[in-house]
Length: 187
Image (cartoon, rainbow, N blue to C red; front, side, top):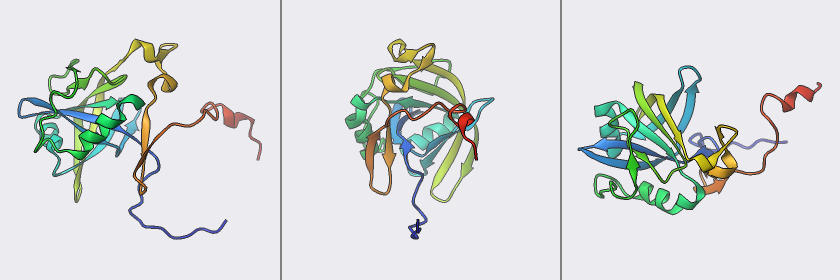
């Protein structure tokens, strides 16, 4: 199959959509983010790129704590809204019911079926963003979203962002079990 050259700023495809929470000027603030990934297994580390002009960045840099809230499909409208408006101009502290775990400055969203609280272990200043690497110090899930003691992706119904077409999608069909399906492959 012939390849064609595309723009170099084409980002990974697809990207998980989350709400990142931080305390800024004594109030919880939440922003939509999709540039997020796990970067280490033990200790569990997660990295998120936050634009340097974003309101939440100030709180994360000051307190060195943040939350990652995984919304389900029923939250897509409010999640998109949180990405359209800036905490610099709009108070988003009352949009959600919030709670805290062990960390005082990592507000989590009760309506999200899965939430994580993180302590910043490293931050990397990039040209337009700061890459915050946080250790996951607590994880919380709605009991009805669990199967066999683990979060169930079919019950959570997380969604992803595709770029450059800028669309939200649900995950597709199950295609196989990781670290199992390849055992039958023979070159």
